[in-house]
Image (tube, rainbow, N blue to C red; front, side, top):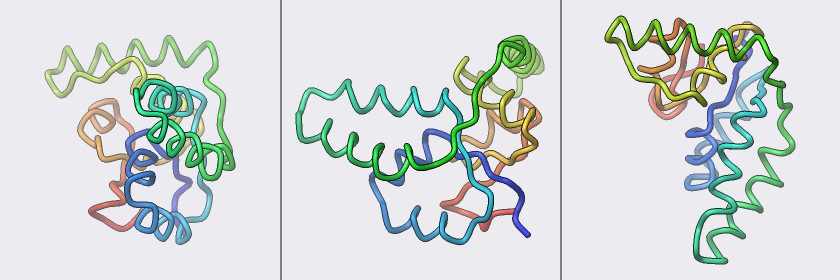
Length: 139
């Protein structure tokens, strides 16, 4: 059986670009969730584009796909954990994760989930198991 998955923002962005590829991959997975940080990151792409058609396409994808996926909350302790994970990764010279990545990593670790992401380097540097749905089968 597949490990419980945690979908990162870049996978959702890829899903908007290549709906069939990500939809087919997701259909083969069992326990899939995302987190509130990921939802907020994707929503930046819903509201920021200058072209109304681009905003509308992103909004539709968010409502039809992402909003229907269970979203795990980020809690207060995740902020402390994110700071430690990011700091350790930077100090060890392994990666330079963003605050968003650190919050996603902390939430994924707390919920024992593998992060589905194209950005495996940053998450692995924070000790999070990963899978890239565009290059490898899920764990």
